[in-house]
Length: 122
Image 1 (tube, rainbow, N blue to C red):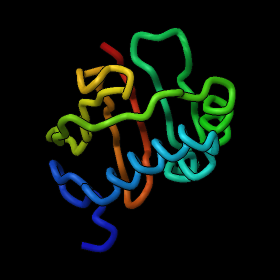
Image 2: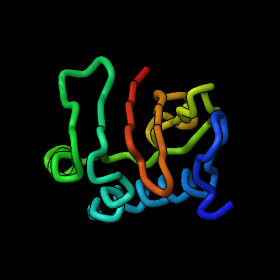
Image 3: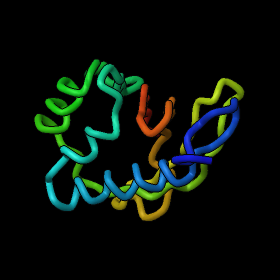
Image 4: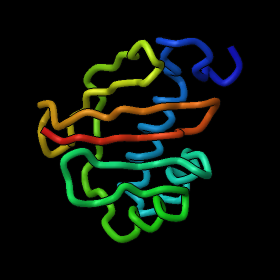
């Protein structure tokens, strides 16, 4: 399948998700979040469940959010699955949490871009 993108409900675009994880961790290490922001669709939404920040709508707002408050920990994906509607659910651990679950990311991916990312923390 070209680009390993979601084309059917419940399908997981593994190659894209690995690229997202690698790009995120490289951004944390280098401080350059530009390549990470480019993985978002122009009209994407980034939200944080249960936190009084965001949501951030559009690449410019997402870029500004990463610039204003950049993450400082890399992450590891512990588990991933796809909901019936095609939303990808990834359980993750921050490097500071030594492999313990830190939270969950819920992604909607179209083609090779993130349409929506909702992050919640434990």
